[in-house]
Image 1 (cartoon, rainbow, N blue to C red):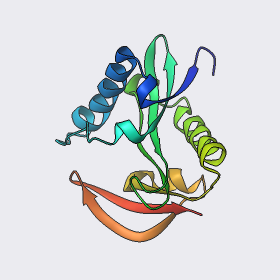
Image 2 (cartoon, rainbow, N blue to C red; image 1 turned 60 degrees about the horizontal axis):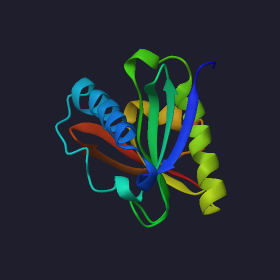
Image 3 (cartoon, rainbow, N blue to C red; image 1 turned 30 degrees about the horizontal axis):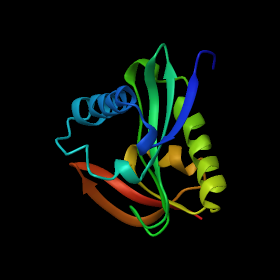
Image 4 (spheres, one colour; image 1 turned 90 degrees about the vertical axis):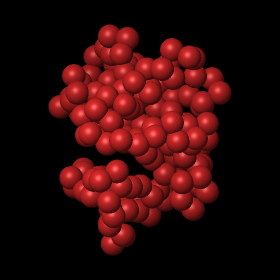
Length: 149
């Protein structure tokens, strides 16, 4: 896709404008669109690698990546979202490919555990994730734990 700029940064090198834009897109998607009242600033951003796509100076897609032992015993990916104005452009698929490449190169593993909203199980299965059988409500939305091994 033309005009897309992908960025990967640890928390300590994010600019204040980048952090503000990240928090804004996450709140737009998870809190406003999905009507979930939860604390987005959960104290885990400092331990994450932040991956996002920019277009027209705005965040189009975003996720955060964790090393082993932060969210799970395995590496993990979370807060996966695409801004409503940039959906249906395959940014989510491209972002997941990049996230898995980052995990393989930086953490030397292909094992990744995620918490997936149930309506995205098929999407994540395209990347080798399999349901673990652990299902639960998180922020009032049905989720399944998935593992890529």
